[in-house]
Image 1: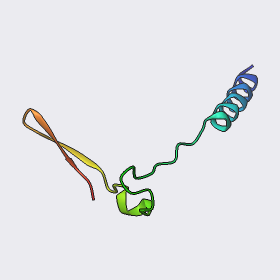
Image 2 (image 1 turned 90 degrees about the vertical axis):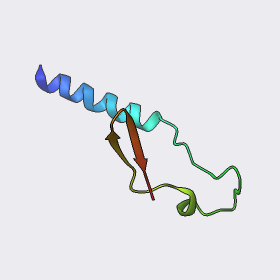
Image 3 (image 1 turned 180 degrees about the horizontal axis):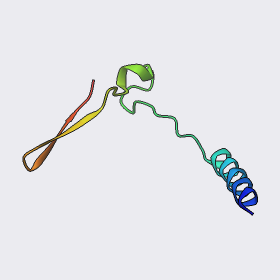
Image 4 (image 1 turned 30 degrees about the vertical axis):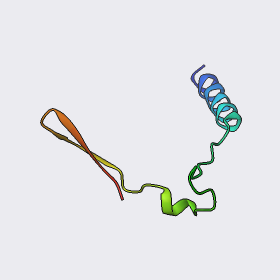
Length: 57
């Protein structure tokens, strides 16, 4: 019975992941801008008192 549940979960996961649409990001201000130039990298968050400090490159 355990193998049946695992197999059904595996098949359902593949079906779910293959049915999801991929969203392509673009720069609304300059559609010709290469994606690496406007995509943030190395995101971070750190608590400072009652606020959160967000950082990225």
